Length: 246
Image 1 (cartoon, rainbow, N blue to C red):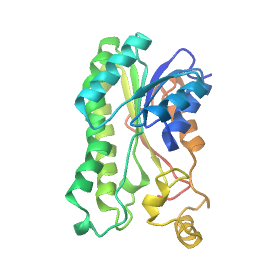
Image 2: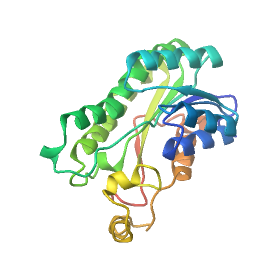
Image 3: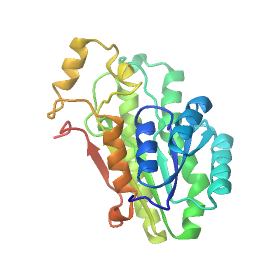
């Protein structure tokens, strides 16, 4: 129960890594607001873990402000902000990715971190406490061909995490990231382009531990980094990747 008494927002919490993190936070004693573009999906997970659901478009300023207001009203205070929501474009030559796809990837993967910070960092500063966790990717450390702009958005998130950590440390706020390798989530097919035994084998050959990451892997790492046991850890982008980036 390393998060007992804590309150948390988990964006992208209706599926994949976000769901795994929401479930882990709840299992460790936190009160969790499950936030997702799918209101129905968020409601289903929230009901299952005894949390609160919120529908949010993390790329939209008004929607994120409403999320922040809802969370602070429901919880009175917030201890943990967890930014999981993310998308990718299909594997494509970098010059052939459409402008619409580029804009959407950057809005969901990068602008969202700015927006949640804009509306919740003042609360953390006022309390002189808080933990922010961003879900980046091994793609931001060791990029894969044909996922260029998704790679870049995750590299941005890693740099943003470190910059936020330096600026917010004097206010008692820790900021970290986790870098998952490709995992068993709804986005796996998009990363690979196609989900076939051959494609899976090719991806797995790059992971020394020989398996994809799971939502449970991310939940365990996230719960630790957001707990008081990690009170001396900030500015870290921790690879949860089975050795992919070695």
